[in-house]
Amino acid sequence: MSDYVDYIIVNKKPLHIPNARVRFYGGEEALQEWGYPRLGHRVDKIGLHNILGDWPEMLVEEPRDTQTDERIAEMFDEQDRSGTHFIIDGDGSIVQVADPATRLCYHIHAKAWNRTSIGIEWAKYADGGITVPSLEAGNQLCQALCISFWFPMTIADYDGRWNFEVSVDDPHFAGLGPHSLVTDQRGVGDCGRIIPKYLVDHGPFELLDVRVGSDGESEYTRVYKARQMELGVHPDGWPGVDFRNAALAAGYRQGMYQLGKERETPAYPLPDFLSAVGPVRYAMCELLCPHDH
Image (cartoon, rainbow, N blue to C red; front, side, top):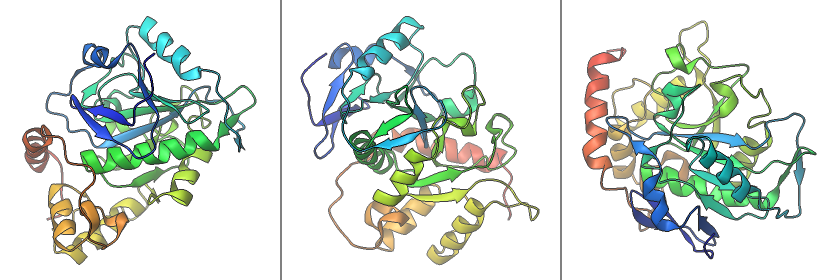
């Protein structure tokens, strides 16, 4: 492992995160050997995971440094480089395994979700402990990724499993989602409740239910339709590029509704490839996805 730096690599370029302690599995150059092209899929989600998805779980105030991140990265390497883009250890340090501009090799489950998501694994210990330092680091990492890739700081709430493979609920969801939302492989304990709750309580993140109700809409859709109407955007419930641009023009910081209307110099620039890949996917969705016109 290399010494700590204060940046991650996004689309082969450094993205600085205040107070971050980051290492690269196999070295910074090795990141480019991992992952596969995203092709036409726009990155618009973060998959929230924890190592050992057991239940129950508990919040641990003090740091724990058992180099869990290094061991897990090695395990993923041995398993045909399947796994996650980032691993956060109990001391708050981050190991970057792959460039989030690429997808990893997911052979088994949640393929529709994994093709367009960035994976983050938190260290979770045999006693169910998740440390505050790891949660603080994850809060900063998730904010940087949301702003850099521009997808909303919205966490999908759930009660049971969301069958994203067939998009029975919200095919247009963009934001953060627990691993257990899209697969039952490790149950509700992956990622459990502590990680989403911490992000909501200590960051700009919000929790919205993605289950479709009897009216044919989810809380997520209803909330974003209202926000689109406020911004003068067609209210289809999907916060896409037009929503970001309208929010930015209305004074929302970084074009992020959750950050409020205080103007400031952008801290995280959009990766260059989004200007080319993003519009293609949005144009295709206009043709293929149903909208309430």
